[in-house]
Length: 318
Length: 304
Image 1 (cartoon, each protein chain N blue to C red):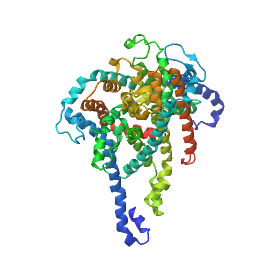
Image 2 (image 1 turned 30 degrees about the horizontal axis):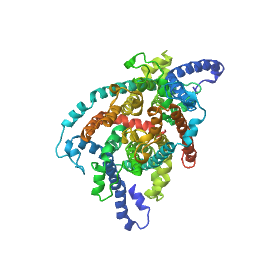
Image 3 (image 1 turned 135 degrees about the vertical axis):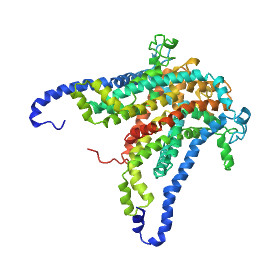
Image 4 (image 1 turned 90 degrees about the vertical axis):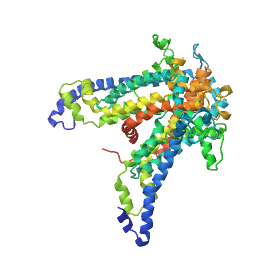
């Protein structure tokens, strides 16, 4: 492209125009499945959700426009606040713990250990296993009488909490289940660590830097883009947590749309699901969806903004 | 490396042995302790699942539980699959998984080709929009999509009036691409030298022929990665089949097992045996294709 001879420049423009048009046609043709999906499965449903959020709609009879009533109801709905609190509690714990675990495991795997392949396989495997199956296992695992967790805690002389019967421990159980996915992130982090030029460490060693200084001054700054990536995806997935809460409560949950002890397992999407598909409150659920949409965007934006202060970007590649 | 490190320091005579020891500790003892403890914690739930799956009914309800089974009741697996309509659910899971995987492979290769092998005005902007959809939490469109699929005619597929209570909402969206897989494939296709496409075009091949005969064969590793990741995701999916499938005989394993445990008092050991059977195909896939799983992570992860 850049090698075009100067003599050709005059006749080049119209011909490139034709080529560009041809490329545009083919390019759009190849991406057309995504384009269609984007419009039909994302853009239109979001607009439709906004519309439904201003209506009373059971899913059967046509929607009736009721203005802001759904949003007014949200503001005074104790279960909305409860589910929002549970979800933020979960996200605020699961994401930082996940980042920390991924980092520790990745740094450990980055030492040139001969048997690292075994660790890698064991740590990664749980992250591709179905969350519903893991949650079923945890119901049994965390059972105060028959479960192995309390049996082991008892052997170690530690207290045996009633995991799924106590509100705080029930919330922590969700965080524990999420941590089984940390292996996947440990591998993402490991790939990041392997990408750090060894020369940086060597010259730091010549300057007499210790292990902690090297980690603090080289590893951590160069890993910040990967950490940001983990936080952003973790945040998005954290706000969506559903399956583990649904399974741990047996899907039914308490009266009036609650779930778990003191509704501690009622996550936001679980509540949205109940409103839409158990109580037929599609309009109200649409308003809940709009709130989730706005909160997700605001939080992602806030994280990106906050990250500007600490994410280290290498000089742009040519 | 170690010698220059130490030689630079004052008091080297005193520091050398302890320094070397601390380096061994740091480089080989400590990471092993961290990793072994980590692996033990990660493996514990699955160890418990497996030993519980082969315990007899009485042993499974002992408190505290036995850490190792006294007797192995292998018949639990046979009991579990006859107790629950296991094979029917497994067949449904398989149909959905195969359908969604075919969709993912077809669509994401084509889309990634359009985003990497053809230069067209506006390509990068459109690609950024595509990537930005990663931030859209899927549950936001749950209500609207359910309503939309509930209005689409199914033409009698699976005896349903609309797309609800058919496999269609679980399979068809896979044919419209997924930003993660598009990104992964695009990264891979960008690495193929441009000259190959140019040569093919000079030879008079159309864009489709270039895609099919030149680029696709070279993209096979990425195709395998996407196929594996899409298959695992479809097999593991819970929320969507829970929403869309209403007849018991259409449930995949995920929903079938969850509902079954709610409606019946399933014995823990049989439940764990069923869980083992659900987890097993993924473990086998992982052992067979470990390299591709890891590649998917590395490509998708590094510049996300």
